[in-house]
Image (cartoon, rainbow over the protein chains, first blue to last red):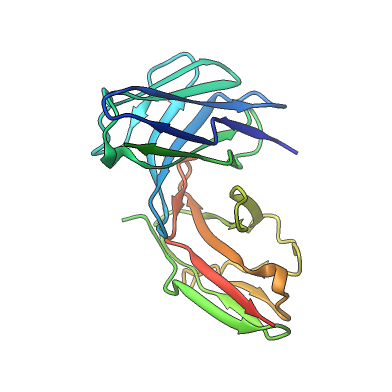
Length: 116
Length: 108
C-alpha cells in the first residue's frame, strides 16, 4: 500500500530556532500533500495544501511566513516552522494523495514538536 | 456550510456488543465520505469509504442522504477495535473536512 514517511518523529528545540519537517511519499508520486496540526485530544486542523511546483495554499489564520512549505518534487514536501515559540508546540501531520488516481489521503506518522 | 459532526467524544462498549459511531455531515453536493482510524501510537489510516461499500475488519458504513449520515457500525466489538475514529468528507477539492473524532473503548 501507499506509504508516507514523516521525519523527524519528534523534535525538541529552543525558542527562536527553526525546525524543518519532511514528508515523503515512498512508493507513489504526490502532486498534492497536506499539512495538519493536531492539538491534544482534538481533531486535525488543516494548515495548508502543498502543491508540487507551485506555492502552497494556506488556510485562514495560518501564517505563511511562520510555516514555510516547499514541495520541490513529486515525493517530498517540507514544512519549516520559523522562529519557533512554545505556542508552536504541537503534533504536525502530513498526508499525500497519489497523483492521477484515487483521492485517498495517506498519512504520515506525525511529528511531535516541543519548543522550550 | 460544509461540516462533519461526530457527536460522541467517547464511546465505551463491552466486548461482543454492537457498536455504532455516529457521523453527520452538512454538504450541498454529492458527498464523498470516509472513516479513518487511529490506533494507539499509530498513524491515521483509512478504514473505509462509502463508494467502496465494503466491510473492513467487520465494520460497515452506509450513506444515508436523507438523514445526511454516515454512521460506522460493527455487530460485535473486539478489544482491538479500541481506537480513535474520524469521519471525513471530501467536498471535491481533496481537502478533507474532518469530524472531531470519537474515541472507542472496548471493555473486556
